[in-house]
Length: 382
Image: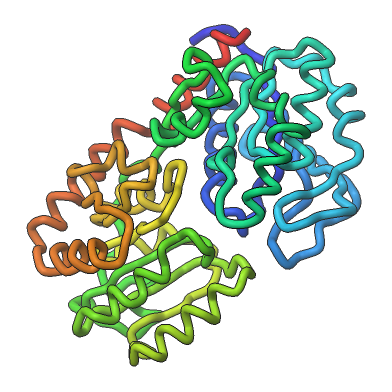
């Protein structure tokens, strides 16, 4: 192991925030494992917890998994964009860090922290968490802001860190290739789920033999759920469980209307946010991740650790490490998704093969292995 470093994480949200998808658990795992290696990790973040919840205006400091987390009072917010006015002052009050890790893009915390680092000669690495390429909403505005207000954030970083080759391509026009490093996200350790019927099947009233497809993640546009619901509805006797918080952009009522129009009201189940998603995977025959864009796709990693086979679109970064090992990788769209689900649900041997392969990937890309790579990246920067 190299020398012990003083590392600052700057992130728009942190645990126990649950409404921001996979990035928050990724940050927490990185901080935990870096602390295990003996590095000092300070996390600076907002008090955001959920899309519809008012963040606290007062600051607090907690010890979480060996890291010191400073939740900065957040009097203003728009979705995941939280304004923490004390950020600059707190950065200046900390002992000088060896390196700062800036997570996210187009938010107060990442922008202010990167500016502070440039002004004070502190090296920082920039990890956009899949936010770099403008997508979905206000695309023209994002392009305009990226060329002006946020322009210096990626350009001033010592290195940019991405979770996949797919995400690397998004940065090519702005960051020189030699300053972009691919560091996959870690996988949970392989584990044995409880025997079926487990918590999910018990909640839905399903026995161990009913075919069950699972989707985990925010109910949001771009996740391919408008393809998943009709794909499952067309498969006789197959059940679908969608577990995740509502992103509040109108997709949930559209999915409910689609479900009812297809006559699948008794087979498509909207579970809402789930406190312990790892408990769900063992009950699923297949995890579906049919997204239009994911820089990685942590739910496929979680399914792999449980030995559950996945169907993953080729627009997800995790497809690069899961293809033909833990998942069937398919083109984005309803027809390929339907065909892949039918194939997997009809072939127990293939599901078992992918389940074993996914567990092997999880062992290779364990968090301890990934964090050792992360520490080497910091050493290069320092």
